[in-house]
Length: 257
Image (cartoon, rainbow, N blue to C red; front, side, top):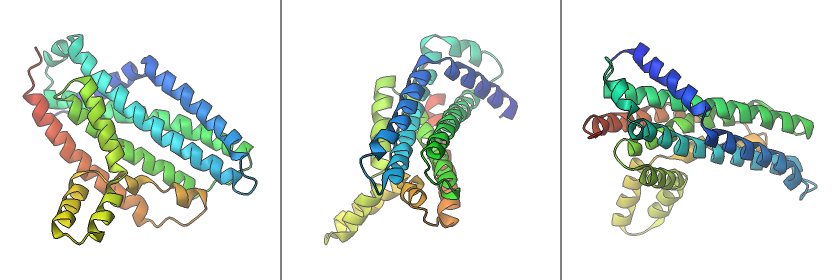
């Protein structure tokens, strides 16, 4: 496996994603929503800046995930649909390297978009007189880490199914990932041991994406322990690696004709 070949695929993926019209449509809507948060903040005289930043974080998280899901799935499928994948695989590059290159390129693309949205969020916050501190940087960092899992999930499903089903499955898993903690606590509160075992397995199998949501702490200026910043990184690395292993195995056996 050659890192150079993977980097080449990643670079081409970024170039292709930047030319994607959907990326700019999502970016424009995201920017408008962030600016709209200033109007929403006027609904409260006491918590105005906190409401603005809380809404801004929600917009950034949602639209960054949407970019990872829909653009990621479309870019992988377009290579197969346009038959350009045959030209790529005819060169000394394996399917695993192709898939990993696509994954790396898509992650970097979502990070570029996240950086742009974070800069706009910072500018709007400063203009509105809202406090900005290290907790905001930690919250943005965790959103970036969360996107590595979302892109890995999208890569897994797009490696063996249609774009529509891949988008549906990935979106569903994204929503479920933000509910796994609640499902786990509900199952633990049940008296039936069977329900508790099911809850434990659901929590183990599905990604726990709420680990990457520290918006409340950031917006309210609460301290965020270092373990809550770096432990999710290790979790994302392990979970994404397992998803990519499964995606590589499935894509290696996929009939591209």
